[in-house]
Length: 299
Image (cartoon, rainbow, N blue to C red; front, side, top):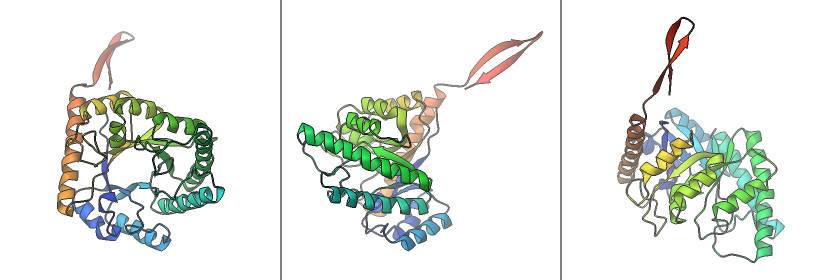
């Protein structure tokens, strides 16, 4: 059983500057963060501001584990129009440059537009090919910058919200420098979180951890919705997942309440992990060695 690290997304403070919340997060006991790309929070076009953020994160003894690429209706890497598609590519590449300055491990991308609706078969196939082509360029640039590129499963009602769509897009890419990020809330709303997890497991690098009751993507702390976290963590252990958890919590409360929820959620996940570890102690086998015998201890 792995003791997975648990960090916090700064997205729970997306409406205020990152410089106004880093001390709150650090003081709340979190040293590992995912940096939100919302412009009012951190303008990734302003590389000097990004450098200042990187210095402040280091001064506080924190680690920027991941950076969430921008997502909006107009940032559409699947768009039929080449001009719109190239504009989306350039926007995401600018964010990747900021992520590299922050020295993150992972650059998290939504692999499609942020609107619902299903186009006709021909347009759908073309959009998937467009996504694969653009993501090739993004993943290649991320590799050059020394950061990992991961695709996040989206809400099921959005275009390419199906896990099979993500896997098709990954299969259509030329590069193998691509991984996945499991968003537990999105997966639960799909109706089969465990199937989604197993489909992504061959490429799984990190987890966006949040909960809900199956009705709305309200980013509750783990343990306060309907997800069976014991089962989920058990199955993650069985597939030997080795990444980190980033708590993605709603930001509509006072900072002290958000941080209390974050600490409670981290404790909840660690308690489950500890209990699972205790239920699977190290094994001890006895092997003969020549004329004597010895103990071969493994985990």
